[in-house]
Image (cartoon, rainbow, N blue to C red; front, side):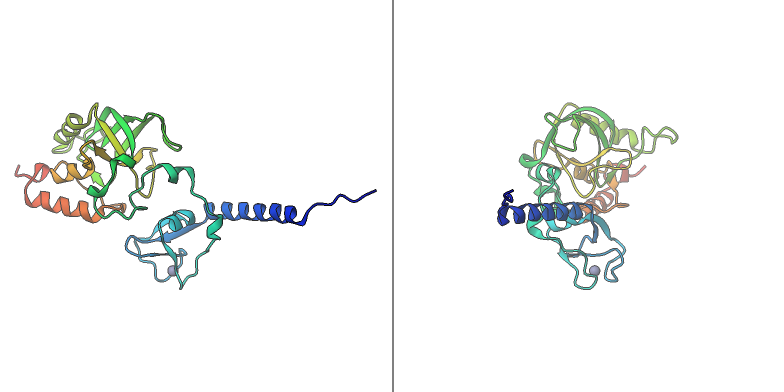
Length: 247
Ligand SMILES: [Zn+2]
């Protein structure tokens, strides 16, 4: 019987594609740590990590331009084997673009949506036509980096200025066309989308809420525009805007 000859190049090709497939899997599952101000990514145990560390996938760290730390030597995958996830291809994520101010957002690159209901000052419901992967056709959005006084909590009374904040969002956004930008985490633990909501004039409504004194900068979790939003809150307090006004 004649032996079947398989070209060496074909065998090599198959082996290489299996190996690069494995690399991809590994990269998608590896978690590394970054900080807001640093340019390196680290292992969780690294001594040079500050307390404000943020867990991200290795793939995200690389896509955002972070370099491997030379002290803790985190994993470095073969760059050529990395491909973008579908979500990264379609969602406009401000931290990946290193935007330093919310005014730099480009609504033409964001996900368009229509506000179909208003829940609270900082929470809305939207319909997303042709939703990209990872998004649903109807989503509840918790606006990133801002917290307005509570009006709909089942066990808490309506907080001071809660109704005003809620009415402001309703008046400005209900029925409006908006554009969604994202940051580090796509969702909170309740499954709500975490987004910056831009209006057609290119303004970030999250920032507007703080600027006009309808909410404060929500800094329990870090986000790309944290310094800007803190500054807006300070200015609103000084100017006695909205909730910071005299009683
Ligand atoms: Zn390190």
